[in-house]
Image (cartoon, rainbow, N blue to C red; front, side, top):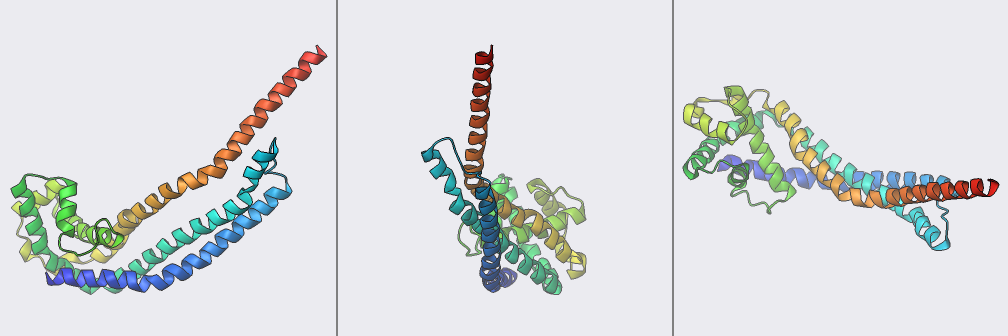
Amino acid sequence: MESASWLIGEITGIFGSAIWNFFTRGALYGFLGFSLGLILVIIANKRKAFNRPNRVWTIIAKANLFYIPILLGFLFGVFASVSSIQKTTNEWIMGSTGAIEEYAVGYIPEVERIGQQLLETGNQSEELLYAKIVEGSGFSEESYAQKFYYWFNRNIISYLLNKLGYSNDVTGITQMVEGENLKQLNAGFFGGISSNLQNNLAGNYFRAIYYSLFLFFIPFILIPVGEGIVHYLNRRAFGAKVASSTDSVEA
């Protein structure tokens, strides 16, 4: 399919052109995150925030002097790198309005093919829809490029469904394919699809990436936070015991 080849080439170009921004922006924000972490641990160390009840625990806690700046450096750098790809993508979408509208028209036969296959198989699951949309794209399984390809085309289908008054799910796709003559649609029908794609890609594709990154970093964030909470609870419990012993002696 010629239009699919265009999109595949564009996605390759987007990810290729984003590489420079990916590394430069990531390195800049990574340095800023590291610097912020360094300032925080220096201040905390001066206030003896890493002092613990015994020597071994203090050594473990003071590992945060290195751990926290490195963690914040990676955290800031990675999220900034993904943000740079999102920025590149948004710029591409808004600069390719006409081409995207033409692509959407060319994608209509593919929507009909997918809808017919879903009807024939009787399997109207989101998993099968994903497989049908990315079929033949050539991108690695579950790669970011493949997921981008999916969400881009899925948003075109969603645009069709919403504008023609069908539910935005697999059932809506099969009903649309059965009840509409999609071949009569032209580029004018897809006016405004670029803004729609920009909003939905941010809401679907990039949100999913940010969410997966957040889940990845959560355990690493919880290490110093958890240690601090344990220290706080231990100090409170120890302080309560000391207060209790003092009251007993005075009595």
